[in-house]
Amino acid sequence: MAKLKLSVDPVSGMRDLLPRDVARRDYAINIVKHTFQLFGFLPIETPTMERLSTLQGKYGEEGEFLMYKVLKRGQKLEKAVDGTELADIGLRYDLTVPLARLMAGHQQDFLPVFKRYQIQPVYRAERPARGRYREFMQCDVDVVGLASLDAEAEVISAGAAALNALGFSDTDAYRMRINHRSVLKGLLDTAHVPSDLHATALVAIDKADKIGIEGVQQELQRRGISSASVTALSRFMSDLETETPMATQATRLADMLAQHPEGLQGVTELQTLALLLAEGPCQSRLRLDPFLARGMGYYTGPIYEIQFPDLTSSGGGGGRYDELLSLFTGKRIPACGFSLGLERILLIMEERDMFPDDLNRGPQVLVAQMDQDCAPYLHGMAHDLRKAQIRTDLFPEVGNLRRQFRYAEKHGIRYVLIAGSDEVAAAQVAIKDLVTGIQVAISRDQAAGHLQTQLQKAQAT
Image 1 (tube, rainbow, N blue to C red):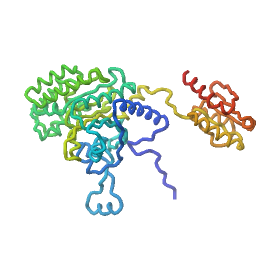
Image 2: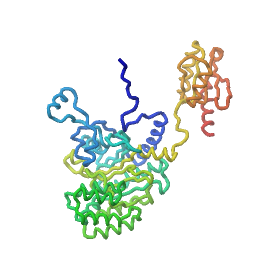
Image 3: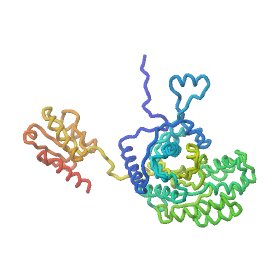
Image 4: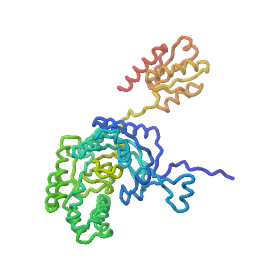
């Protein structure tokens, strides 16, 4: 019987990461992490799996559909097959709900105001597409315990500063779109959309950047919104173009919401937030987008989103979620956060050739082996170089020197250290530069210093 041939491909929507991919991810993550630390955020981590009772009911209708559930195990699964729920655990959908659970369980461990950052993968059963995967990394910053707009200004600025540090420093490199849930409510009320249909109307409106105003009109009608309300909302969307200057947009909104105090308060808060951000890394990238709708399951105040000109999907975003922690603590605790979508950012950086050329963190030196009797000496030599912080590979077996040179060239290793019986007897080594072809003999105790100097010169050129 022929053996079954197993697939070598990863699960759809998941990826294998080769050394170059990992180097680029590490480069970006280190920049993001450093930036978040500059803003005073502290790191946390949470488990990959959460109880379904923790996750469900927090992400709206789309989130419920895209959530990965984990089957019960052993006897629990056998009992579940008889009619009870088959799953009681799910893979985390984002990093915000796990943060809320952690904060509720460790209130005694944190100061009244806590600033956290978290960089970990999350999981969604999405249809894979350009920049969209089922496992992807999020880079979050959050402020818990602060009700003022200073918290929003901090998380938005931290996200923008990270993008700028990654190389998105041009004014047109991205837009930071902001809105407020009270503004959305005010526009829906003014268009006479019944309050029990607000959530479904926002789901349709949130698709505007993908399906356009006409598509939104059809979606609203399909969701039971009256023709008169659809017409009013369409007029609002046409009159409130996203690229309109912030001050002009706010004035138009205030006129439209003149009879809606809650909506007007939302406009005022956005104007205040814009002032707090005026001298920060956002600068002229800030745009007021009155129909930006995200996180319908838990955002309660300002909301914000990154928009790249060559990416239809969001590059990240966040908002205020003052009610989320109450689900775990029974009391209202203010909080807001911002998340960078690392995968989409990496995609754009690759397409724009934004990565440095010197990201290779592979070996810098190869210690060649030609004589088994010299192996202890060469192993010791490799350890000497590693102690000097020189990335050193030891050829794994005794072999032909030409073959070892080819190995070094294939792996981008410039310097090869060679020692035979004569060098061992004299406590020396030979170091060959494969780029220039120059080979020098040097004492063992001077080899590390010599290589450090050569590596510095090579990096400088």
